[in-house]
Structure formats: C-alpha cells, structure tokens
Length: 171
Ligand SMILES: Cc1cc2nc3c(=O)[nH]c(=O)nc-3n(C[C@H](O)[C@H](O)[C@H](O)COP(=O)(O)O)c2cc1C
Image (cartoon, rainbow, N blue to C red; front, side, top):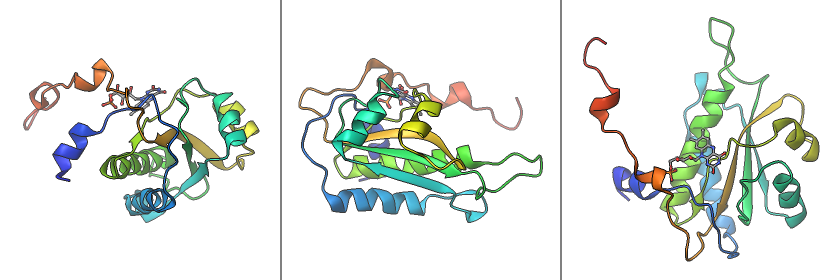
C-alpha cells in the first residue's frame, strides 16, 4: 500500500476478534522489526512474542491495555547492546521505538491491528515474565484482527497540520 495511505489507515485497535494470527504474518512483522534502523546498527531490540493464554494473563496483570488480543509483543532493548551517545546516554528507547513503529506499519499492511501500549507496570512485568535484568521493556504491542465493531478513537482523527509543528530556517 502507498505509504501515506497505510499511515492514515493504521489506527490503535482496542478491541480484537479471537481469530488466530497466522505464523507467517508474525514472521513478517518480526522481519520488519529487523529492518528498522537503530543507532550504529547495534540492533539492541529484544522481543518476546506471547500467544500462550497463561502468559497473556500475566501481561493483563500488568496493564489494563492488553485489550484481549490473541498475541502480544513485549518490545525491550538490551541496555548492554545499545549505542551510547557522546553524552553517555544509551539510545535503546529510541531504537525500540523505531522498531515498534515498523512493526505497527507492517501489521497494518497485513490487515492486522495493533496498539502501542506504554501504560504498564514495568517492574511487575519484568517479574511476571522473568525478563532478563539487562532487558528494558519499552512497549507492549497487542496484535490481532480487529473485532467487527472496532473503530478508531476520536484522537486518531485529530492531526495537526504540518505548518503547526514546523518552522523554516529558524524558530
Ligand atoms: C508512545 C506511545 C504510547 C502509547 N500508549 C498507549 C497506552 O498505554 N494505551 C493506549 O490505549 N494507547 C496508547 N497509545 C496509542 C495512542 O493513544 C494513539 O496512537 C494516539 O491517540 C493516536 O491514535 P491512533 O493510533 O488510533 O492513530 C500510545 C501511543 C504511543 C505512540
């Protein structure tokens, strides 16, 4: 699909059908995750793919935003693997965020819904899912087919025109 059209049709899906997600589609989304640019190409993303009901239940204990999706990605970065800028700041959050955005767009291209979720208890998630201590969770990404009556929330349509957030040559 043409990129701007794809970007426009993607929306945060907050109601999912029980229809399982095909293995090849999950693989394609993970391929998109591998194609995302990262600082110095360090590729510090570490992604847990969850489809087991009992592990999804553990995730639901850590967030109200799992939305009953049949699959959830837990997108982390390895703090020992990410590039560190000259100010001494690791850029893992940036890398994991770009990866997540690529995954969302590939999922949309495949007719699947996602919702980026930052609203979760990270300490509890680390404990529940036994996430290794050098892996930092950045986003949860529920994935699945949208329910028949799912629709975009009103915020989806509230887009600022570029003139409101751009300046030319100087501020
Ligand atoms: C960094 C980030 C964090 C977000 N966290 C949540 C969240 O915790 N729960 C949720 O329901 N939506 C969350 N969203 C989805 C946004 O609310 C949504 O993308 C925005 O309102 C635009 O709507 P749209 O995605 O439908 O176009 C998040 C999005 C981003 C990019």
